[in-house]
Image (cartoon, rainbow, N blue to C red):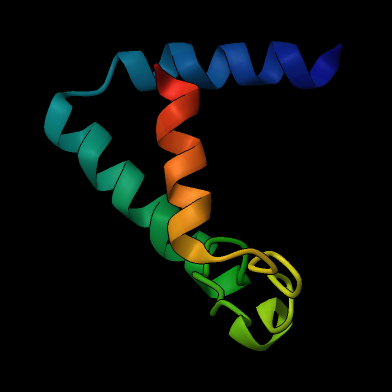
Length: 73
């Protein structure tokens, strides 16, 4: 429960700041998070997707599309 109370106090204090000060705070927090690596955009591992669709197209692609169209009606 102490963490919740602390967060509420922080939010209350932030509410007292001007919009410009709040923006500066957000920018600083984002900068600090990037340094920790938590907010770093990770690259996708496309190699892990290789072979996932194996066997999906055992039937003709046009036949598959026609079935999808029939199911819609």
